[in-house]
Image (cartoon, rainbow, N blue to C red; front, side):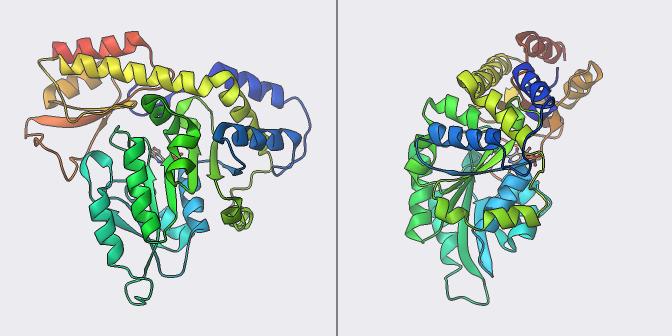
Length: 350
Ligand SMILES: Cc1ncc(COP(=O)(O)O)c(C=O)c1O
């Protein structure tokens, strides 16, 4: 009953096997091997255009270095109030980019385009004392388990572009959002105006594989230096490439995300039907938020269920209440239907 996070799961066997194979041979270091280059080419196919790809170790690095590549002195980056970049990365995006984050409210983890517009207006380009608006970053799927529709991405992008700002997407759970919408990587990114993407693999079956993807290679010119100076240029970068090779082969990444989302659907359905729990809000990717009695949470933990208590978000429609707790449940490629059913039984037993 592991629902703490999708990064508690191991790695998919196809990825492990590919790593084993890679470990038996010699190849050029620092991203110059034929395999690194072949996988960069594979990203071109996936995104249906020439992209610039940079492998890094963590989602935090992908976000931080993406934003560093967009930075200006005195720059301000706009993100959702409860985004991972502002709440959960210990200030790394600010540290590496030298910019600061400005929070933008919006329901269910999605920035409200009108609020975004008015926040940006507070930082005109010539306002030397306030700092200047420099970039917008959005998360897809969001930290709330919701997914921006294509029209919603376009709306955020329209506001960013109207103000001359580049748009970054934190895609730590990119695949989960993609299969939920049922669209293509190109449609969900550059065709809607996304300029830079943190493409996550770790949460969806890789061992440790994240990539920064630039849709305009011109914007990527500084990244090789930014990455090296940030200690993220791996000498054995080909082991990240190898993971991505297996991950992207025969749509494995999409199958794994579909499975994780299906397990979340099962969990959602069970909790919605339960007398002892309620869904905190509607989610559609592989994260589920539920309100359960404190005693039930303790009993579930005592029986081995793993999940995180969650802070009540700023816009929670129905407050949690003193006797209850808000919890986050995350499913992954490795979640089994039996785990979900066992957890639902534990919740029903109270
Ligand atoms: C939305 C989102 N972005 C980025 C990250 C950062 O990933 P990492 O923990 O690999 O730095 C996470 C991890 O939980 C996340 O949920």
